[in-house]
Length: 155
Image 1 (cartoon, helix red, strand yellow):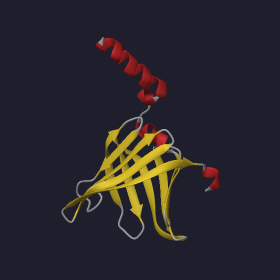
Image 2 (cartoon, rainbow, N blue to C red):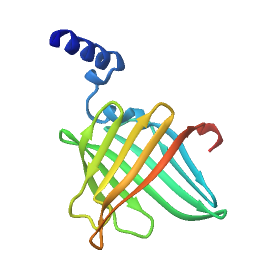
Image 3 (cartoon, one colour):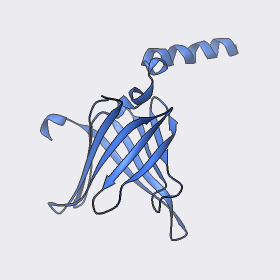
Image 4 (cartoon, helix red, strand yellow):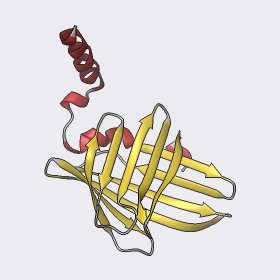
């Protein structure tokens, strides 16, 4: 029975192409345009295709019709890991290394960063849950960004 279960799992992985993926290709499912809207706030995150051992992501937050925050991210291969190099508006750059890479989840950590110490993405169909978490002023904190996939042609 265990052999059958292993065969089913392997077949499912092989069908998604993840088993053959390496390096930055393991994050290719992040590619596209994502958006989250709440009262008075709109957050967009756009990821380009994997190319040159990297992906480029940009995000912006609009509050009451005005740009309030933006960030550029370089997701690149670093040995056997992926490095998430964040360049947030008004803050120094920071690098987070992958601790989990699956066909539907990416988790990056930097335990020495002030906040966040963890950045993650989890794909569920056309929904993407992004989050930042860690400790700030002795308090554990997690901020979630529930995105939905949107057309890139209107961006």
